Image (cartoon, rainbow, N blue to C red; front, side):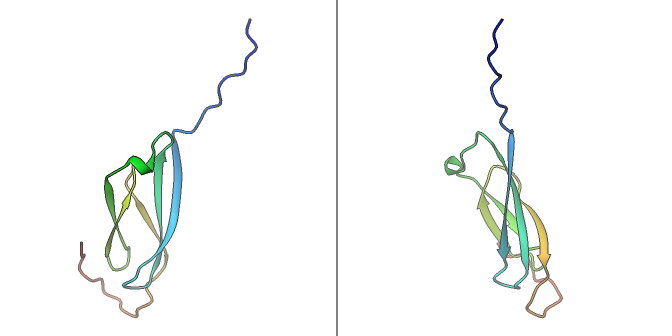
Length: 87
């Protein structure tokens, strides 16, 4: 009978996030990503879009999952209407 301990289980997905301040409207939002644990972001050549939740300005990021955006603080430029999306 073997008494070796089992291999530790690594998570399949690793959550990550960062704060982004929109250079156009000034709002702050959190961009949430989920990485595959065995996936190297340095090898990924694809970028996926995400947009500012207040003014819809587009940005792109290298990632292996669809970015999720959560508003942290509203726009600071004094405008209330959304501008058209710019790619």
